[in-house]
Length: 335
Image (cartoon, rainbow, N blue to C red; front, side, top):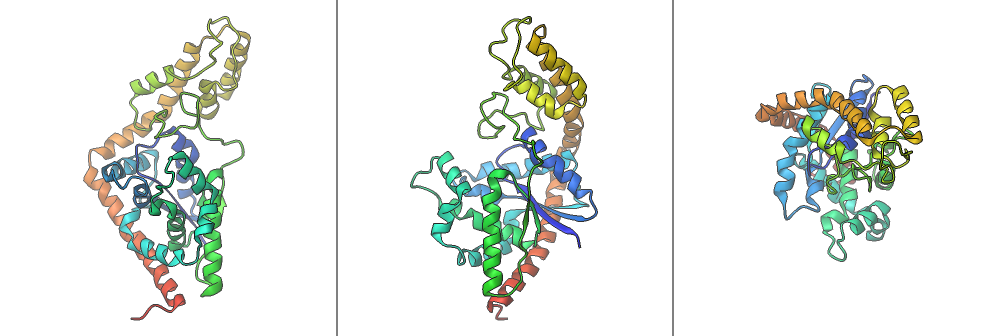
């Protein structure tokens, strides 16, 4: 039997190198494995849970995220690319699953608690945002995904899915599939932002985007945080916390050269400009083909939206089968 894999992104902006390292490259690898069936969702309904008063931010980025998907090599002939809001079965499944979860349990979800604090909602948490983990249960179970790629911080979300699946199967019938987490490889930490203050993030504005032109990549790399005590070329420099070397560790194909540069930097005699120029070369070698594919697809936005339309139609057929099984198990399939 094939592995069924569900993953996706919120359409709140262009995707960046952090997305590429954290998920996009792995998705391309997974789609090319004949043992996998991959569903990738543009999670616009989830994005609206904290952007309801600015829906254009969400709707205008659906195409941008799709362009990034196609640019990195996701193939609609191998992978089902779809828009969450175009699958009405997901909302109906969410409603049924909400009855199997207590408010106290949702409040205990550490991911939800952290995000509520991060977004400074206080007592004004939108109800949709509060219960979006249950919407994620619907997303996963609608396609009977048995594998879900998640970061360490998202493990509590998947555990809540597993709890709902077990509760549903216990009360009604053994219909839903209990998913397993696919965690990042050991040592594959989050890519820091160019400012070195935290992870690369759309909201923090510290990212290098897959769609950035070569001159913008150069500008951002030249702004990168290095070692503030490394003032002169001859000064010894620190590797730890130096964002340029962190990126070279991840992206440079010649790791022997990176090791030599580190040794020289530690002892002095290597300036920040030189290592930044090398990183610019490395990143533009990676992003050049991605930019070219993106520009090609961007010339036909209607064609890209048609890919999402066809993917959504296919995804809805799969979700409709699951919904029918759920309603039959619950005894509410009346007609």
